[in-house]
Image (cartoon, rainbow, N blue to C red; front, side):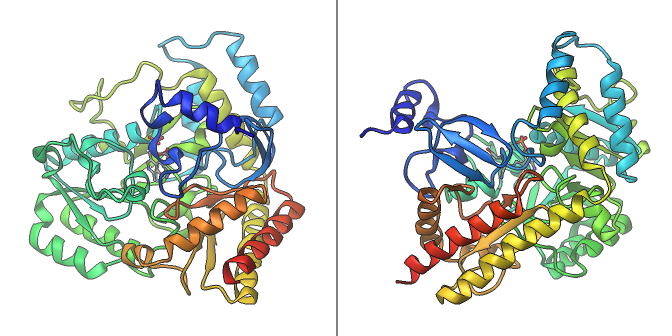
Length: 428
Ligand code: KE4
């Protein structure tokens, strides 16, 4: 019987490059046909063939409350009924800005945009305008969206395609971007010793999620902070994925490190398009209309999108929310690790807050090179077996996974049981 997913994918490719509106969705890394989803409720999604899955992608992180949260949907409908967009200030975006500033002490001022890419692109331009310098430092395997200067050995989609940089980016765009190895403090110290006074900013995923989940080594983030302070460079924490995902205060709250600028997205939109960048007031006030750094957006602060994000942020701010989410994610990871041990398969898992990584290697990776050395083929075989079991993971060995408040202990235990069956078959 022909799958409706196959039919839709075939049709989509007539109109959309690769049949998708974002490359990683195309299943090119894992092979096979992407699932066209028709409905999502709580921890579950349904594809065009009517098959149900436990969802651990959650739209790549935003859906921390699960799909179609009733309160979020109601906030969206009520707001939309009063007008979809004005291109003018609204009280709602003021409430969002205040909420972000109150939750993240490093955000003295914040500006809303419509995606994580816009947030990081704007933060980098702002850092360059503030310092008068051009050099941007990033880390291999980290992905910060698809602005030209960042598509230099990016992670995530590009890493999945195995293309270390993107065509169409002129050399003089990426020529100011230096790419170091994540977690390599010596490299950063050497670079700053050589070029410290040329560096406008360092942008980093403080917990990496775009080359699978990688935690910062002890001292790595602290070293970035100290070096940027010493040399007058702007430290940008890209918390588009980790902000309000690993904890209410993001990674900066977990580690007690104050970046100069922070970029946000995903959870703060609750599934609708919202991004943000913010930080030190003396830097943010260089932005137009106050200062010379230009940045703009037709739908920036869109009230309907902000309504989804604000309701989400309000609901996750309740006491115990992140303790429960972290514990449930840990239950999944511990269950997977036990199943891999029992099956005798070289695989493991790890987590931070509500995000997790699954690795086909003996121990969690601490670098891009270690991720790249993991058994991608084993992951891909595991991936398709989990799909058959009704579990939807990110379609790439180089992506993190996400648990929502809608995932019950029974969902987690059913996922672990499915993983155990899949790992047993891998071992056979
Ligand atoms: P968006 O422009 O996709 O909203 O955000 C870009 C971005 C910036 N910074 C970080 C740390 C990110 O993780 C992202 C986007 N993440 C990917 C998932 N690996 C989005 C999925 C996709 O590209 O389709």
